[in-house]
Image (tube, rainbow, N blue to C red):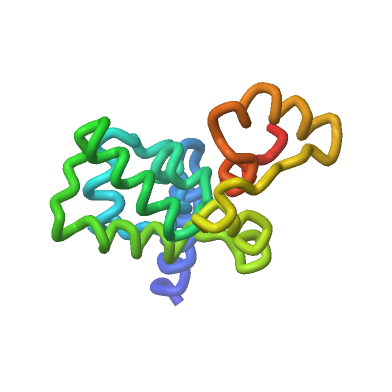
Length: 150
């Protein structure tokens, strides 16, 4: 009986400790010693939930992850050796990939055959995006980021 009383107190104390302000569980799909956290968090810091900032806010096609990772190496000096390049792409694509339906909407951006594809805005919001962004980027590329209105 005495053990049960102490055990119940211990469980309650553990529960209280875990519920304290500031205590959060990592909500990241990337393992602590995984290649993305090891290589990308050099520049992309971890937020309060243990998520890799900027990266975990975006989903892309595997081809886009390849382009972005290559750009991070070339322009920003990301510490990704050749042997780690494809493991990074694989891990990013495993957790932060577009659904097949989302990919179908923007697949033309990866096709040389459609490099002259004409994009036409469908509403006022898209007109604003086209005016500001489509001068340099295809709308499919922008849409592929799957950003929320916020």
